[in-house]
Image (cartoon, rainbow, N blue to C red):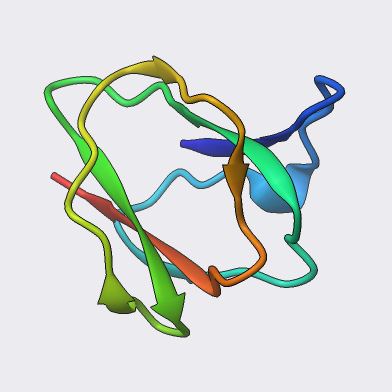
Length: 79
């Protein structure tokens, strides 16, 4: 799973390979969330650090519409 800038750039710090929570730093404004996991794996965006106060699991693959990441502090990759 990765978080892409709206201009198409993907910063290496915003590429996630392992399951579990990942805290974000300086990820604000509109970003595109890309789920390229296989086997039905998904992710959640969370308002708190360490995977606290999260959205439902998003399992669709591909790119999302631009999403406001300003209030989001972590993402969680789930099987």
